[in-house]
Length: 217
Image 1: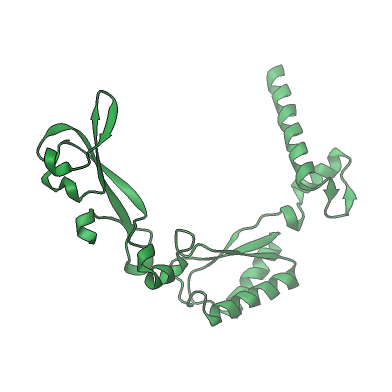
Image 2: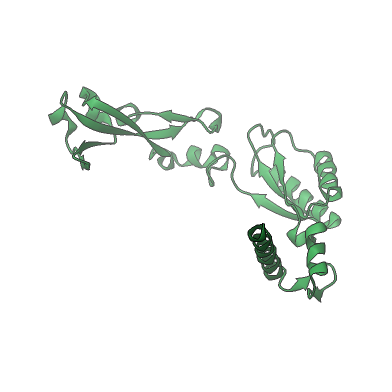
């Protein structure tokens, strides 16, 4: 029982030090230094804009000024400190076009009027830098290197092993790369075959499509 009480006080102490550090020893609501637990407690009950909830503002349809205004007002009334504008699959408004930037600027102005910080979230779609398919469309060389590796384990080295990205053989707990799998084709052993993984180009969705090297040449 005593251990539980001591642990609770320790946790409270760590939380207090964390918040004091994050707030820069200042109460953002009053501009005064935080010198009591009562002031510290108030930051948990009603955090200032800098430390309040900042949810995703998902843009995944046709974006309009009316929708932006409605949602921003709801975020403000819910006590949020700001929003992350996050483009997601389903987006109809063309990404990073003049229309997109105009709507984003409108959201910025709405945020200023409501006292909300507005941030841009850059991942449309995954991974960061994909830009809704614009990057691979303009730079095919950025796509054909693969986005991952998939492993296949086998006891017999197949004839098409040379078509894999690389092949490893495990013997006595050690792995050795097979430089020329064609030489050992049909051999028995503990083999690990690795092939590149690619995102499906259709719709630029988060779907892996696994291909061996021979199928992408």
